[in-house]
Length: 304
Image (cartoon, rainbow, N blue to C red; front, side):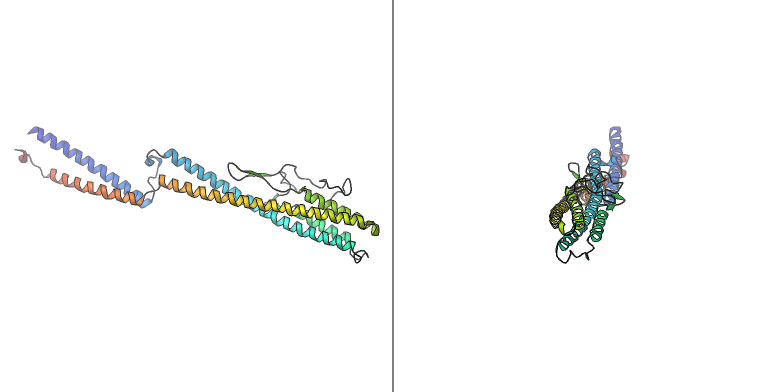
């Protein structure tokens, strides 16, 4: 008889413990369903803490790259606009030289030098374009204008050089992701600008020489056109780099979405699975309460 009583007490205690465990599990599951996350601390991630923190770190790094790339893209688009303006200015300089060579431009009414000086000043202003307070065509020297006025006279007329350039000879660099580091695609000492400024000096000297300077004007026009071709190519490099940044950012987006999905698998609640588990535990709890009710009805006389 005493063995039956001891066995009943043990079963009673086990049943109470099971009831408590199931109720705790149900409460956790219901909390997961309502909050949408498996746990509000690393303790509830069931050994997946390292995976979770690694995924979070990768996502933060990608987000940082994307923020930097937005700034880089804006800087490149500013450069593209400046290059477009420079191309337009050089077109005007070409047309002015061609007009000066014509009969109508040789009568002195064209005011050739003043117009060329104005175009050069506009070009210098374009080369000194800044973005967020930093000059974009000066290489790594972004703190000061890369070109200052007046433009110095060349050491040798008709020979392109960078005597006018005050910037750095090293390219400004930026990193698009862990593997891709790029150079800013153009500086103010680009051969295109060297040719354009050299052609300007040739044209001014030829104009001062009067009618005898036609051959020099022709040479100046040829060099200006060559500089214009190089300028168009330089702008193409800028546009290609913009496309490169956009393509890299699309890859970042895809990777970030993938990592977000994996992170959610680790940390977010699977509502369907959690609801199924709740139903199973509720069935266990109901059965446990039935056993508990049956045990509570037992009397010593039941064993006599």
